[in-house]
Length: 263
Image (tube, rainbow, N blue to C red; front, side, top):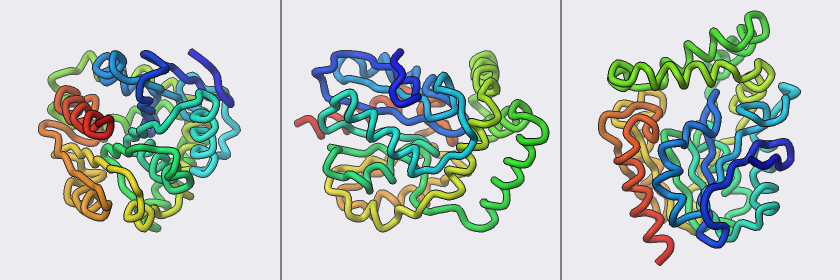
């Protein structure tokens, strides 16, 4: 593991291969991509950072913005000398990926958006995030994170993989309160990237769990249609955490997408 600008960064595979950068969701860490790395590290150079304040990255001030997240990842890409990487982000990682690609579209050869959206928070969601920040400030992060994570998995996955699910809960409830608050603030203050996705000069793959209630299939289909080179893929038997819940389906689709970019 490397530390780059305070971010914990893991790299897998041959640095000479096509780079594939995975950006995790909230309030998680890069371990959420553990079912993707074995499928891609032979053919691609996989990079999995923990966002500032989360996972094994340096302790956080709790004052974060999506712009700061984007700058961190762009710095990382330059530091590792990644040539024309593909960005793959889930949920909050997708918000960051969209803003990163908007800031520097010439850097990338493709974008994979999992269970995410281009729109900024409406007022009712901002109020929910503000209430979550208050709760974490008063109670700590563990209770809130435990409750939130239970809501982003498809119930069928939890029932069939309870041991695996509890392992994720254990790991992600260890995220420090400051990091959780910082990520909430970053999401609350993010800009709208709806216009940006219409201008991206590279292929965009939108992946959505069939039972995702947070970023529903209909919303992600519209995202895919709005991109010039957009494609939509719906993941059966999956909710908001499709890469973890149905990794075979997600990995096969990403492989198909990456082969098309490489050719």
